[in-house]
Length: 184
Image (tube, rainbow, N blue to C red):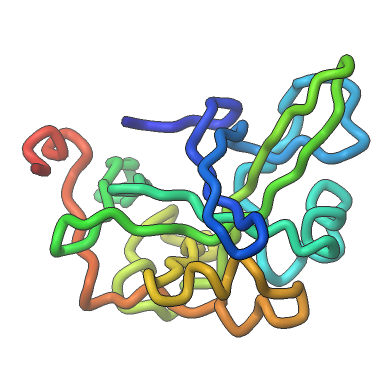
């Protein structure tokens, strides 16, 4: 299932070291938001600037870390100047979790949970550098391994950088999105 900005998506949080499943809007609604409106591209938060950007700073400094469970992510790969969407998935076809931050914003007396995926530079990543426009900076989501999920969810923002690791290239594969229907 594709998830697009402003869609609801599954979110895993920690509540006293116990995993909790919740839903959240894909794209950060900062605590000062007055309405559910995604005026800016807040679905990805760059790790290099997350603590400085107004939309993300509160969640970051308050250690509001989350995981997004996925079976695949989709990125554009440019072939002959044209974008072709590719699914990126684990070679063993197992789901995986992505590092995220979340926010809970009160809008019209209703608590709205939202999230952003954290991304790192991937200009030199052997697998992820093939995606996005040829001259654009390459970015990658952060995969949190099974054995580090609880550590990620309970870390502080000063410890979070220890989790900003490259996706293990030898564990992932890609195929054109049109072929993903045969993914199973």
